[in-house]
Amino acid sequence: MFEERLKTSIWVGAEIRRLEVELITAMVLHKGDADRGQVLIKQNLLGPGCVLYTQGRDLDGVMVWRCPLGEEPIPEDKADSYIARQRDYDEDLWVIEVEDPKGTYRPQS
Image (cartoon, helix red, strand yellow):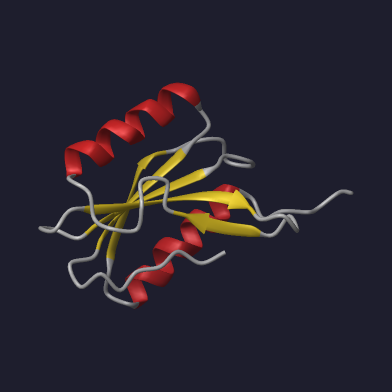
């Protein structure tokens, strides 16, 4: 079955603009494949640590967000190490950092 998907570069741009409206700072740390790259989001809580989000599909093929290292904040150096390993594995990976001291951010599909 063919599923038409939104280009990653368009989704990233829209997500950053959505955050700007909410007065949350976000930046692209690494650009991947503009059409089909996966996205990894680093939510930096600016003190308590970071939460990472990665894209995945559920059993029905619907895109969902998962926390590969758990939902609790982890030290920033541990998050950065995970990101570096993922970038070594996937050159097409997009990495976005969201500065969110209030912890309100959740990625949208």
